[in-house]
Image (cartoon, rainbow, N blue to C red; front, side, top):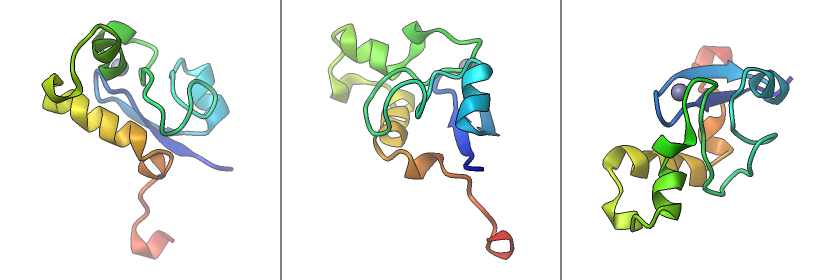
Length: 93
Ligand SMILES: [Zn+2]
């Protein structure tokens, strides 16, 4: 079973879940919600899209005016799904 590390870009909550479990938990993240490598909100069940990098961009914020936090979120989004794969210790590989 493939699992991904779901990271909420607003509250930084992370969870390692299957796509279906993440969807059921209210995570708005690929592969069920949105597309890997495409900027869209990456939120958990408790956070709203108004605090996401995506929302800042569609609201007219220039990419170079984004906060470092949002730039980091976009970098993670653009490098998915690799950036969402669970990190295994060498002895667990
Ligand atoms: Zn959150």
